Length: 243
Image (spheres, helix red, strand yellow):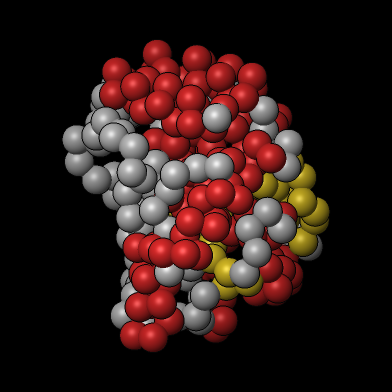
């Protein structure tokens, strides 16, 4: 694993610790203990950002549900379009957005979504029905649960397509990158670098989003974020991304 890690570090140009990340994935596949695992922290010294863990509304308790591929996400979206018949929007966030767009190969643990609909309760019920039927993990969570969002995030959300009466988008990639920077683990930082490499974001646009949302950190409903520490973290990671 050490040799593989060194090769991957040279390829990506980031001094990240992959061994713990790989070991977690192996443990998950062998033991099937949970649908989530925690990745190792990056080796650079990042300031602690959160005073306490932000809780997310989950669609169902984590269990032995299988990981999801791009094909699984497509199957879920098509099934939802057939089950829910009222106008609505669904935003793919997190790893689901990156896997679906092809930025990250393989699979993701969960399908993170944000929804807007004329009848959101009915849409949630439809999603929960599919969670049980398809045995997948779906969480109602997006970057807005962790950081303030730029005012133009909706306009910046990339359109995926129509699934029945539902319009599906990728959540604004600048917001997604900032939320990943706020966590700062190996996988998140690799995702941010991939977003830059594939020109889904630029450092200039990311700086603009960062400068807009920073003054709102530490204020309701984001009182758990320390804005000074977030600024320190952003500066450190931005420097690494430029190297």
